[in-house]
Amino acid sequence: MKRSRYQQGALFTEPRKTGPEVWVYKWRETGPDGKRHSKKEVLGTVEDIRTRSDAQRAAEKFRLNINRKVTESSGPATLNKLVEHYRMKEMPMESHEDKRRSTKMGYLSNLNNHIVPRWGDYNPKSITTVEVEEWVKSLKLAPASRAKVRNVLSMVFRHGMRWGWLEKNPVTLVRCSSKRLRRPDILTAEEFRTLLGALPDRERLMGTVCATTGLRIGEVLGLKWEDIDFATHQADVLRSYSDGAIGPCKTEISEQPVPLDEIVLEELLAWHPVCGYPEPGDWVFASDYNFGKTPLWPDSLRTKILQPVARRAGIRKQIGWHTFRRTYSSLLAETGNDVKVVQELMRHSKLSTTMEVYTQAGMTKKRAAQRKAVDALFNRDSEAFKGEVAMGKRVCSLIAPSQSLMLPDSAR
Image 1 (cartoon, rainbow, N blue to C red):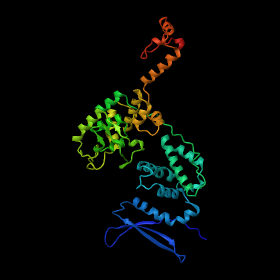
Image 2 (image 1 turned 90 degrees about the vertical axis):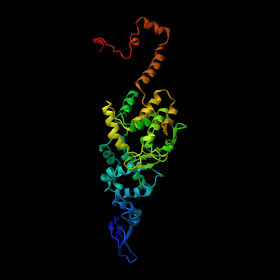
Image 3 (image 1 turned 135 degrees about the horizontal axis):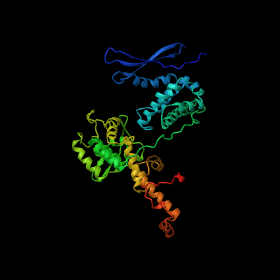
């Protein structure tokens, strides 16, 4: 018996006697007489489906249906076919229920730019752990980005296992570190004031909101005037703007209201009459390019305004909008706040994220904590210790931190 082959089908536009052209998907299937016949389906007009990529996505359900018997019997012959099935079943871009749009876009980027070009023509059953591990190590990406590529590939294999096509996931045993190459920069209070003083009014207010509330830049751009309660001094965080689309916040806890300091409220009140879009339903930081229908584009503001201004101000650190959020977290811890309060102000789901990823202790705080430990070790407050200092036996304890201690040549 001749084995059925996986069909891609044909996609093309077709004119109509009246109205615009339509997208047509065409394939072949075996009829009751045992012969192969051509079939076609109209997907929609070129006005409704503007690009070939959109038409390809519209044709996915037909392609999967006509190849159902092939895939049910032996599974997808190539990883590319498995990826197509995964995208159709688990990544519909119209739905925001399971994954945020930005997450889906990240998955698609890893699939299209890394996974399919390398493994698309391989039979999924022939891919081995060692091959994948060597490939992941060779990617010229940051460790965290390599780990994301590996995780997306692993999800594709798990999808194949759920459908009964694969018996194992070779990516499970792939070793890949996601450790940062460098620690993210945070601003000192002096650097923050210097940067804000050099920024234009709009970007200065955005930086102020980020640095005093800990909001992510997408959440700041997702604010509308009706979300800000000047009477209770707080803002409702209801949405986030990411990759050109409005969606939910990163986590459920991220949707909690945040307090607004008087300084922020004053600047918001000053911005309101000059922003150009002051109605309750308008965006606080609306885009003039789109006549206020969408918020500003954060990446453009970062590369064209924030970073150049920081360099001109003499700040050599790697600055982004998220730098303000990290600075806020570190200052909350630096000023002696309870860690649970810091976590809730940052709206992190896990305390470990607050303490291990975002918060950095400054040298002054480290020195104060170190001194308390040394006090206990050497009983520095005792009369005996003070007596040794008076007699010159504790020379180091009399040297100020800013002074340098010149050692004799024999001790160097």
